Amino acid sequence: MRIVVADIGGTTIKVAIVNEEGVLTQYTEYDTESKKGGAYLVQKLMNILKGFLPFEAIGISTAGQVDTKTGTITYANDNIPAYTGMKLQELLEKAFHVPVKVENDVNAAALGELHYGAGKEQTAFLCLTYGTGVGGAIIMDSKLYRGANGVAAEFGHIIVHPNGRNCNCGLKGCYEQYASTTALIRQVQAVDSSYQNGRQVFEALKQENKKIESVLSQWMDEIVLGLVSLIHCFNPSVIIVGGGVMEQSQVVEEITRRVRKQVIHSFSNVTIKQAVLGNRAGLLGAASLHIRHDG
Image (cartoon, rainbow, N blue to C red; front, side):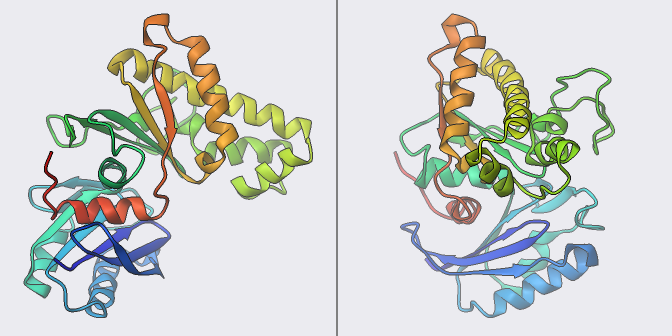
């Protein structure tokens, strides 16, 4: 089966072809132009997909909450205006006359890691991605756990600091306001406004910048605060962490060390693993929705 897959984010649309063995080819990235809104984005996506014809199925990984039964975007923040309510599956099936599956991006990334990456030998794990916010997914018995309304694992909105920082969701003190890469950069800029991204932060560490080291240490404490609560709730054997900043092995190693010091002893056998698929995770996860995985 020739499956065309797209991973829709606030900045880029990643598109590729995936076969039934999970081999990914023709990988291409496009500017989302997200501020032009949901309708523009969907039309742009359709135009892009035409360039990948012929294909027998479409898999979509997308930002926002998704009703996977209908492939409708049930909630999206202002990063993509007027995306909420978009009937993505219906629109794409009418345009291309092939089966379409739509999944939330973090769920899709977790499925990618389950079938092709760091979770390949696992049947149950938690997956968290640290970026603009903090995304989450739960794998149980080799399947996504979706919850009553299909939107389980909003780990970024665990309250870690009651009456703390305002969050875009309307609450205060959410985990992602302290543990996301966005939060890290905000805290670093309070020390030195010249830093614009995580890559610059880690370059500063190589120069033994003590002020930046201190901020990074505080940020890792915030990550651990959320992880310890999740470990005590779920008792997972494995947690897979992703996002650009988690590609730094020393960060994952230090987080693991701090977690082991803070969890109750009977929970301390948890393993924290780096996601390994990078930009391919959501694409492969979207493709897996059309592929039978036996055993």
